Length: 251
Image (tube, rainbow, N blue to C red; front, top):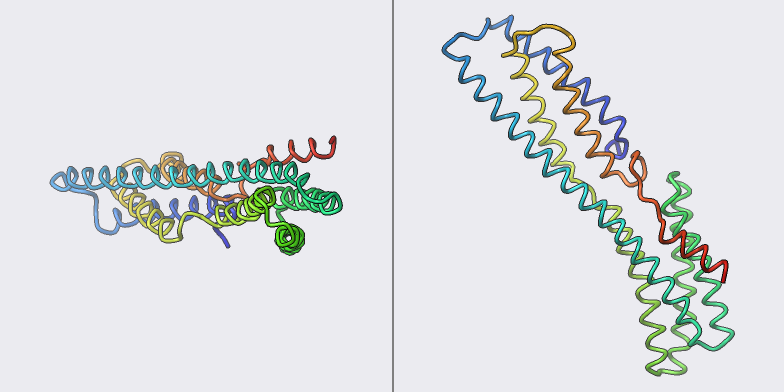
């Protein structure tokens, strides 16, 4: 639940990593300054740790961006599926065609709410209404397909199947997040890097102490923001669904 809030991750990471740097400085005072013999080894270890952290942050960022692109692509496919089925509804008997088009319009409104609603209780209501509309649309198409099992009717059934499948794909893509194990690994490596930096650093100024924790926290925030579909600053705008809704209402 906490990974849904990028701002929370930024604050916690900044505070934790700053304490890690301070802890490294405390170890330097407790154990003693780094000797000339071990200074080179410590610099090598710190550089290797920071390089490893940079690689993991890069991979995590790539994972978050790929998931973001996947959600955008499914939104486009979902709009295309609904628009196509709206046109194919003309192949049904006139009464059922009007009913399916009406249900598709209501369904489109619920899909827009899925992208623009951030209250979890309201989202549960949207999910229940979406499921109900799916059952109604499928019942109408299924009834006509049983009465007239023709190739033309198969097109309508296939189009409705695409509409239902795209909603499932979209929901799965929104559930697909960076695993907790990946976040834990990044957090542990970042802590080690900050402790090593604090232990081997010479500057005790507050500005220099905050640079590394701030940069790492900003990176974590950016990854979490892209990976969070609802709570982040960077969100998916359902432009294709909005355009389709405006087009259907004008029609």
